[in-house]
Length: 157
Image 1 (cartoon, rainbow, N blue to C red):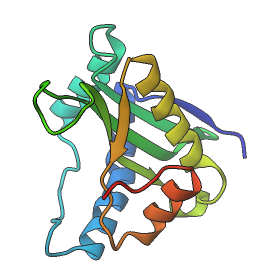
Image 2 (cartoon, one colour):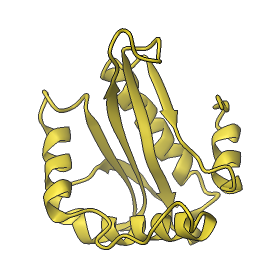
Image 3 (tube, one colour):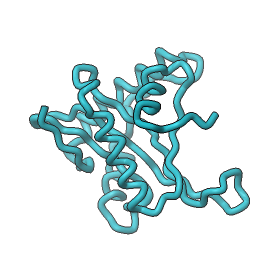
Image 4 (spheres, helix red, strand yellow):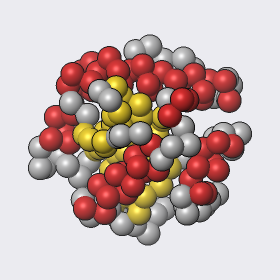
């Protein structure tokens, strides 16, 4: 499979909403007591702000929205944000990045798409000076836990 990983652009809004809707549905199925269905997944305004932020040097270290594209179609996406901590906060790291979501269309899973997206997020985090990269996974999400474990990441709590 031929694939490229790239930053999201404004014309990707509809495709991105569709792919993250899968992620939202999975979360709702795993923990209906915790998650709710969201529509739209991201408002057009918030999407535009995220795309603009990642395209300006001053915003590069605050957000990344990576897309996996194969034969002109979006097959996966990753979203991560910068989290700044106060020196007296709970974390010893002052600049952290949080992986909000990585999602791959079912028929493209187990083909390296998710790993390529994770690598792109890790590259962004390192290049923008983040000291630590973390994500939050619902305990019952065994697929995501296995994915991150296979990628060499560890569980903190």
